[in-house]
Length: 92
Image (cartoon, rainbow, N blue to C red; front, side, top):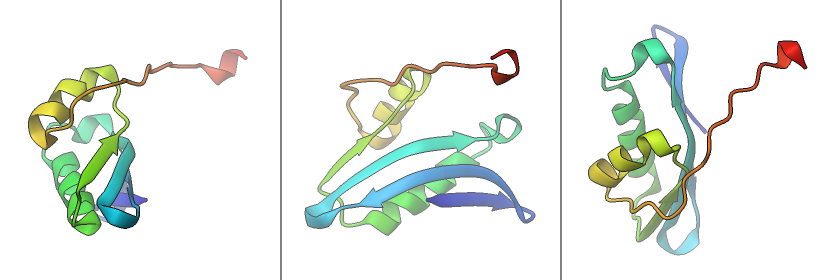
């Protein structure tokens, strides 16, 4: 698990798992909303990819809103996307 910090506070997280034979999986990628679109997520993703090198095969979990961006930026072809559910546990 990688955590991106800004001024000592966590603002992003990414699960980057390196398996034998060059396979890597990425998931649980989140950047706090007010820090999105500023390059923090891209920097964390690049760090995760570099730490998993050499990569021969890669998979990732992606919410539908991000699948196209991952395809364009990281050449990941969407096969299945994860459905996002917001649950308010205060009403449970």
